Length: 299
Image (cartoon, rainbow, N blue to C red):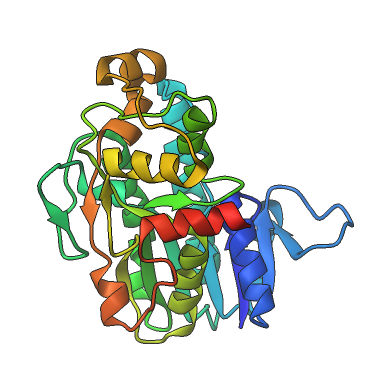
């Protein structure tokens, strides 16, 4: 397949590019900047797509990951940019696809499990309705809705990849969670009872490839491992794997004072089940969190 990835210069985008390239696919990254001549995937700029939508012709699939990072303090200005960047990139891609005689056969839209809202008791599958009035939930609802016009394109199937907490060695949430343990200050965050629905980066890129290449896959897909854990358990596993104590609790009010509204990403939580992925035959390589973290520490 020939696949375009918007947001391909980010952590997930780079890992996905590497995986798809190893699998023999041709990958083009959509970026604000043109290629600098160094080795790497071909680059298609947003400016060129706006000038000439036919630049999107010939692609079999598009993955839309583009959007300003959530890992920053959530000021009003930052939240506005997070929303604008996601909705604008989606709009530009859809407008370009509408001009094509033969649009891509699949469009994979990134989203997040935050769409379900937070709960310590409920389980969420793809059939669960969006919930919560918090910023991540509302942002995910808008991001997914921006891609809905694709459903009117009979030649293109739409997949909405609802991504959980990504565990990667270089980036994702794992280095952030690991740092306090390296400094001998790891422990329970808030109540410790909040669910952490996580996914190993290799399984995440595998699930993207699965969605791109399996014609029967469409609609929402929960990109999270089948065995979510409470935050307290996740912390104990991290400490145990790297040989550090799990002993220093951080109260939720202190986290809110330091991180502001962004603390919701740690103190809130969702118990998410990847029912659609499993029912479609996807096999997780890292279904259990201890093995997943040990794998990251071996790399």
